[in-house]
Image (tube, rainbow, N blue to C red; front, side):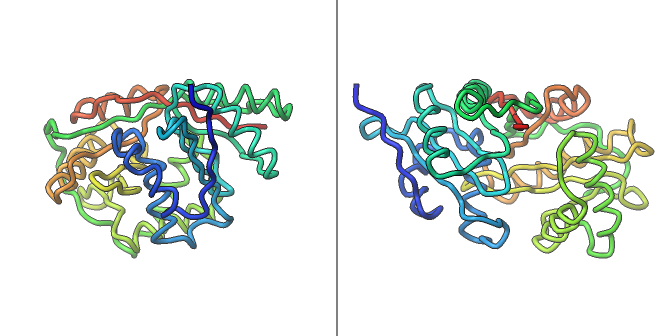
Length: 282
């Protein structure tokens, strides 16, 4: 059996030159790391520190890839070689890089967390079970009154408040300044949409793109407007718009602990393709 070899890459372009073909073989499942690379190439100012990008190969075959863009968590791909995760932990220690957590396929993320704890003594602070879902054809629901439209710059204060509420409800951590910066960025890119029924009642964003797909995120309906199908409508309509633009698929992350959102996504045609864990370190 060929030995494992870890290679660090100085740029997203170099990383993709080695890993892209392997990543695209399961493109929707690898949407996050592909999206990180797209952002590093086209908008490097969105990250504060030097990225940590690596591949691990066995012979001429990639068996694991990953990325960390400080101050964010380490992102891992699927791998059938547990020993590769130990190599990553050892290399991070050698580089004096300390991820705030790990995000990846459930087995890989949990194994890395155990290895990291054994190596550093750092305990797991919290863990969220998630799934990646993919859609290639919309199952159209009975749409709510209203219509899908781009969010307007004049709605930024409302949308920042909604984003903060979304983060709190989903247990994610983002400062108020970061929420405003992210909202401004989405508005500037034309990536933030609302369902409008005599005013905005629900929101969704196109978070990132891959060569053949788009990932939807930040789906949120304020409590006063819930129970009327607005979230289902905004997700279905936005997904159809993405497919109509020529993309082959849409994808999204969902928390397995949230039956309401899971039901919405399944209702419009999303199917689970991978289970992930989002683990924070103390």
